[in-house]
Amino acid sequence: MRHSVLDSEKNDNLVKQASLLAIAGVVSRIIGLLYRSPLSEIIGDLGLGYYQSAYAFYTIILLVSSYSIPSAVSKLIAGKLALKEYRNAHRLFVGSMIYALIVGLLASLVLFFGAHFFVEPDAVPVLKIFAPTIFIYSILGVLRGYFQAHRSMSQTSVSQVIEQIVNALVSVGAAALFIKLTMKTMEVPADEPGQILRAVRGAQGSALGTGMGVVSALIFMALVYLVNRKAIVKRADEDPSSNVDSARQIFTSITCVVTPFVLSTAIYNVFAPINNKIFVELYPVWRGVEQVAATSHWGIFSGKAQVISNIPIAFSSAMAAAIIPQVTGFIASKDTESAKVKIDLGVKATMFISIPSAVGIFTFAAPIMLLLFPGTRPNIGLGSHCLMALSVSVVLIALSTLNSSILQSIGKLHTPIINAVLALILQTILTVVLLRFTSLDVFAVAISYTFYAAVMAVLNQIAVRRAIGYKQEMIRTFVLPFVSSLIMSLCSYGIYRLILIKVTDERIALIPAIIVAVPVYFLLLIAFKCIDEKVLRMFPGGKKTVKILKKVHMI
Image (cartoon, rainbow, N blue to C red; front, side, top):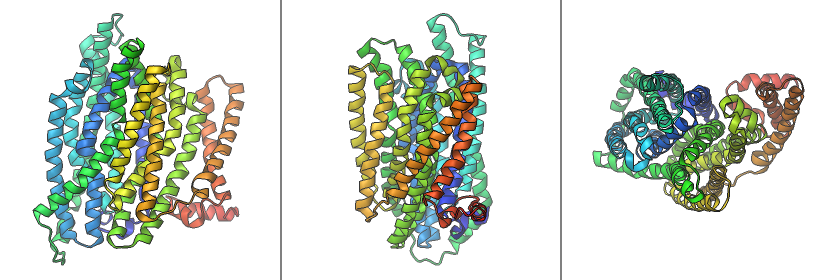
């Protein structure tokens, strides 16, 4: 464990480090999906709507206070490690922890005592359950960022899985327990006030699961740090560098780097609470829709369709986290060409995953929704259409997320903020227009989200090119993976339809179709020479894969 932290040279494989985080992210999201199904059965779409309303504003306060801390700490410390200033790196870690404790505490207090300003009255008790989680996460974020700065992603990966497992278990258990204790039965009341009370109590139990998951991850990361602490402190004490930053310099650096990260991430994700406010509170007034119905539809969009579309985005988020310390290190060392090589590899690897995921989600939107949320069948038209619209955003969000991290790594900290503000303004205008003058309902929000992602992707891509002179290769990065994805989709959909001749359940037919899709797409990438032997070896299990492909003369 100690070597994984201190020996950066052993952790410089960008794809493998990103893959570790991506696998953890995908596993976490799958766990999240698996528990969402029984959870939605317990608390219903109304309870899920209250949960998502509270979660949206919990998320924005978390983003403003703590969510960007891992990336910011990773950038700060990676720059010092690249210059071998180990004492300053450790001082930055300590300073970041103090900063996080203060900001996290203030943010938790604001969310708890100001809950009624953020959400509708029925969701206030849910939001108050979320509040303490922000303080806990702020500490967790510093620890994760410290290890990521050393290009070691395994600690963060394991902590993410632990967090989601505990979250799932507590969320489902506490939701049922809270309902049982309050209502004395699990049956849904016939009267509306009873339905609302039951939904609120269930959402509170689910919110408690989020907090307990973060606590469990913090305990794990704290233990990892304690195991390595002796070696970390020793390296800092033996640092021969004469350059020692003062406390003022440390906190100035933290503030100057964390603030743009926070603003960029907050604006990047403020879409949810803004559109939640527009759809749940203003849309019913504009179109004469009952607020309970609007809240239920928001639960379908945000708690189901968006949760599914976020699964493949895990790889782009992981790549973004992995690329920050590596590109930062190269920029600090004045090695721009190596930074461009890492950027090129990062974009290609992200598109290789995101493009087929988007095509697959679009093709199988309805059966995927039914597989993961069986209770959605009465609203399958609304749910699947939202998911189809969001499928396009998978590629766009992946690209914009990665390029935001690249811009931050090369010192263009304010550019993603400007781009995000512009995209947010445009998408908000589009959301209002669609909801006021069309009958698209929550499908309008899915369209505006995809539009928002497109604006961000284009602006960030242009900014990266201007900032570092990086020219994106198009054919093997975008065109051929898309063609491969279309062929993959046709093959898998053909198998899906053939199986449906014998069976009537779409969920049963979906599994073998997905199983066939993966190797078909992978072999097409190799046939089109999108992936060569060098790139293959960078993936987990790549060496064994190369041996097998050479035996069958594929490479």
